[in-house]
Amino acid sequence: MISFVIRLQSRAHFTIRRKAGADGGAFIGTNARRRKQARRRLAIVIAAFIAAYLVIGTRLVQYGLSEPVLSASIAGNVHAVASRPNIVDRNGLLLATDLNMVSLYADPRRIVDADEVVEKLALVIPNLDWSDTHRKLRSDSGFQWLRRQLTPKQQADILALGLPGLGFRPEKRRFYPGGVMASHIVGHVNVDNQGLAGMERYLDQQGLADLRAAGLTHDTRLEPVRLSIDLRVQNIVRDVAAKAMADYQAEAAGAVILDVETGEVLAMASVPDYDPNEPSRTLPDGRVDKEYEKGWFNRISNATFEMGSTFKSFTLAMGLDAGGITLNSVVDASRPIRMGGFTIRDFKGKNRPLSIPEVFQYSSNIGTAAVADMVGIDGHQQFLTRLGLLSRVETEMPGVATPTQPRTWKKINSVTISFGHGVATTPLQTAVAAAALMNGGYLVPPTFLTRTPEEAKSLARRVIKETTSADMRFLYDWNGRNGSGRHAQVEGFHIGGKTGTADKVINGRYAKNINFNAFVAAFPMDKPRYVVLTIIDAPRTGENGGRTAASTAAPMIKAILRRVAPLLGVKPRFGEPEAEIRLVDY
Image (cartoon, rainbow, N blue to C red; front, side):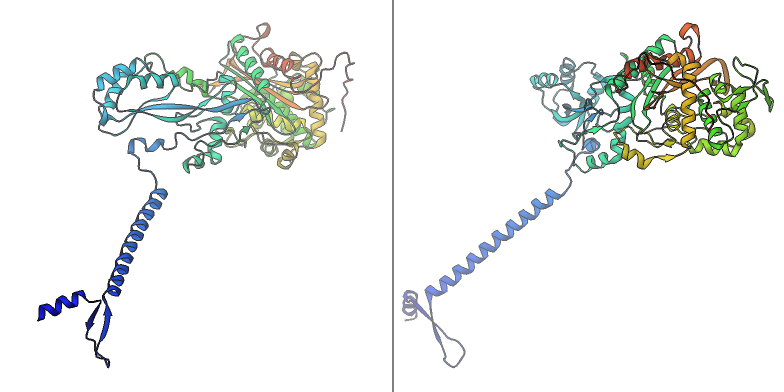
């Protein structure tokens, strides 16, 4: 009976279930129960799928935001493929650019026969270090660089070898089309494309290194950086400096050209120099060529020298600006000055009273010492500080040298500094101070980037009176026509300036037979637009056998300006009568 009821109930479309309550029971359909169970199971499956997708999505987001996992051996090269902006001159000519390259690496764990790999790679890669490569291939690390920056042909040849465990990584290589031409200005980078010198290093200091670290420069085309230099002018200046160094058998030579209104550096060369495409040269025996690396030293901005009689420009400007002298003043240069155990004489002195133009023309040490004495020690130091000659020059170029001066200025210091001994400055800041004498009296910070006259005016500060600047233009023109500046004259152009011949300091002593020569020039003298400064370090000979600045540095000015002036838009004037030279009292 019981079994019959159970079978009957299983065939029924309803189930009797007793419930507590007034009704005492209810009828629940079997189909309804099954549908409810199906919906419950479907909901469970949907919830499981949603949970799985949430876990997967969360993990993908986590992977996307996290740093990539790298082995310690390559962590320092994470940003090796980062781009750098092109560097161009003021006319848009290319100075530096990136090339796409590849570098070879190995996974030593997958190398089957290290000896075989080394032997085959040596057939493709020149100067491969067998022992070092073998050591890398036998190491326990998962990554080893074998050779950086290969050519496409080398990459194809290595792929053809079919060696397991080798791979390639895309990289950037910096290329300098001009080679040595502007090496000290542009600078160079290391194998990871990080700026080490010159404007390349400046770019990293201005935030490029941070952008690289953030991964924002990978394969990104950046806006070119336009420099102030004119590549045509730069080529001439460098050529003249190299020729002078060879012809005069000197240790070094150099030159710089400045725009007196904007402070833009149009050209700067220092020889010996180097090729930024190969900043470190390796000798056949594997050693680094130390003599070649001496070319890294930029004597125009990174070195200080006693600038000799070029400083007489600033001494006379100081006396004129202070009102202690006028162009019509006369100082006694008839006798040497004895002071503190030293005797100060003139080189080829006239042994008579001299007017201020004659003091400048004959480069009288006695005359300039007298002018410095009129102003006084404190006034002398303050004036040179105002001209920026005693402090580090502010410009974009990294590694600019700081001038040296006596710890305590005494009278003997002021006297010797008046004619360029006792203070060492960079040739660049000497040119900048000379530009202030020519442009109406405004000191404009030098720049290696393009700058408008309006931008320069906002940065300029007056350091001397307009009348003092006019007097100095007269003195430069006077010396250019009648003094040592005659050796720098180019027919059709009005060039003025001042020579400077200083005994070099060797082991703390002045060497009588070794000179450091300079010439600071301005042109055209009716309205100076440019200042040019040339240097020649320790020449053994010069024009007509002379070793002074008039025979070495001045002819460099002539060689530069006869080729550069037309490029700078300065028109020659032929056949015009010479302007009457008069002494004007302001």
